[in-house]
Length: 126
Image (cartoon, rainbow, N blue to C red):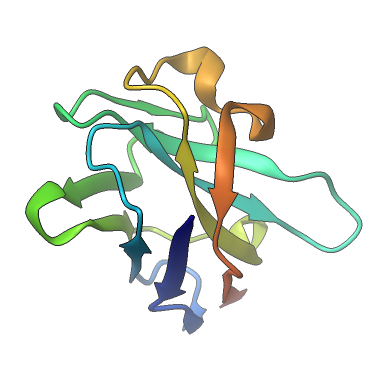
């Protein structure tokens, strides 16, 4: 079993930045693809970014050039640096642990992951 705990969410004005963190514990496996997802009220969960243990990353088109995913394998921690935030980025952000080493554009779907955190809220005001 893997436990994932997110932190770093909050309220920010449009154009601002936030840095999310995800701490993994339990039967962690630093050699799997990890990802960030978000879900706004009334909308489906959306894949934001994913990163392999070796550092290869993939992003949703809506966040490319604004968000940066990174990880510290030694500390079992995942990060998401969010810059130039927009009102449309309002959502609950969750991290997830997959069952595969590889990350690719097709891995930005919930079924690719088997462990999830509870989420941290990001609120962007216009």
